[in-house]
Image (cartoon, rainbow, N blue to C red):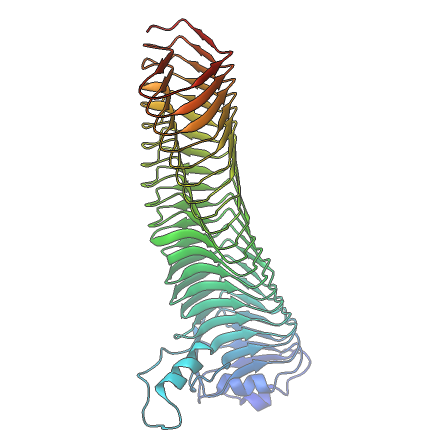
Length: 522
C-alpha cells in the first residue's frame, strides 16, 4: 500500500506508513524538510511539494537508498537559514544509493559583516563562509544528483571528497567562490551541467581525485574555468569554457589530468597555464582569442599536448619558459597577434609535426638558454621570421618546412648555436638563412631555395659550418658572406641563383671545399 498524499498530516505520522516509504513534504514552518530527513529510514522516498523551505539547521542524508526529489513540475527552493560555519553545509550526503533531483539549494549571499557579536570578527565570518558548502558528498557515497540548482552564496557550491563517487547530470551551480571542489580520492561523474559566476574557479580537482567531467558549460569565473592540482588524474572532456577571465585551465602541482576535446573561448588571459610539476595530457582541444597565450607551460612542468588548435591569441600561441619540458605534437597555431611558439629561459621539450602559420610575428622564437628539438613542423606565412633564435639558444631543428615567411626563414643571432639539418627553407620574402652577431651552429642537408633577398646571408662575427646543403633559385643570390664572418662551406650545391651564387665581401674569410657552384646569373 502506498502512502497517500497527506498535505494535512505531520511528518512524524507520514513516517509511519508501511514499507513503500513514500513521504510527501510540504512547506510550512521553518525546518520542515530537515525534520523529515531526520526520520528517514533506508530507501525512503521524499517527494517535495512546490514552495520555499527555510532550513534553520543543516540537512543530512545518512540512510542508504534515500530519494529526495521535487514533485513533478514543482519549483522547490531550499534556503539555508542559519549562519554558515567553517566546514559546514546546507545538505550533506554520506550514504550510498541516494538520489536527489529537481531541487534548488541556496546559501544566501552574505550580508555586511556584523559588528554586534564581538566574538566573531568580520574576517572570521568571511573565512567561515569561504569554507561553507551548499552541498557536500562524502565518505563512500555514490549519490546521484540530477536537474538540481545549487547557489553557493559566496561559499562553495558542491564539495565532493573522501572516496565518494557521485554523479551530477543536468545541474546548475553558480554564485560561488568555487562551483565544484573535488578532493581526496573522490571520483565523480559530472555531465551536461552548467557551472558559472564563480569568484575563483568554476571547478577544482585536488588531492588524488579522479572521475570524469564531460560535456559541461563553464563561464564567468575570475581565476580559472578549471583548476587541477595535487595528483589529480581526472578526465576532463567535451566541455566549453567561456569568459573565464584568468585561465581556461590552470594545471599545477603534480596533476596528471587528461583534457580532451574542450573549447576555451571568450574573455580569458591564457587558455591553458601548466606550471609547477604538472604532467597533464592535453589533446584535441580548441583555444581561441586568448588575451595572453593559448598555452603557457612554465616552472618544471612537462606534459603532452597533442593535436590542439590555438587561434587568435594576442601574445604567443604557445609560450614555454623556465625549465619546462613539454611534448608538443600535431598542434595547429594560427593567426596570432604575436609569435606562434616562443621558448625563453632554459625551456626545452620536443615539438613535432606542428603547423605554425599566419602569425603576426615569428613562427618560432627561442631566447635565453632555451634548447629543444623541433622536428617535422610546418612554419609558414608568418609576418616575422620563420624561426628566430637569440642569446645562447641551442637545440636541433630538423625535417621542418619553413616557407613563405615575410622576414628571414631562419634568423640566428647573438651566440645562438643550433644544429640545423634536413629542413626546407624556401619562398621567403627576405633571406632564407641569416646568421649575424656571433652566431654559430652546424647547418647540413638543408634545401634552401627561392628566397627573395638571398638564400643564405652570413654576417657579423658569425662562425658556422654549412655542409651538403642545396642552395638554389634565389633572385637575390645564393650565399653572401660579409663582415667578419667565418664559415666552412663544404660539399654544398649552390646553383641557378640570380646575381652571384657565392659572394664574399668585407673581411669575411670562408673555407670553401668540395662545393658544386654552377649556373648562376652573376
